[in-house]
Image (cartoon, rainbow, N blue to C red):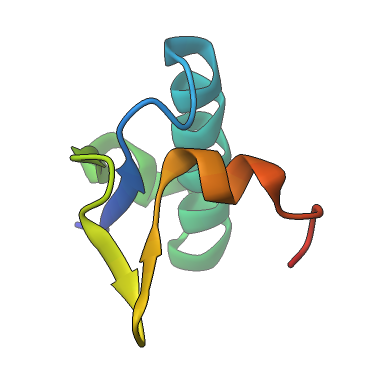
Length: 72
């Protein structure tokens, strides 16, 4: 059973974007593990409190991620 746990800052994406993310991840996992795995694939999207993300000494918020150019 494939399991994906995606953690994102709260408020970064809306419910429709989450649904799209889940669908794309499910397609990717089914492509890798085989279509038969789709029925047992679990995808968990966790909203982390804004400001609860850190990289090195940088606090990463939904706002800082929105300001970054795509692909960075």
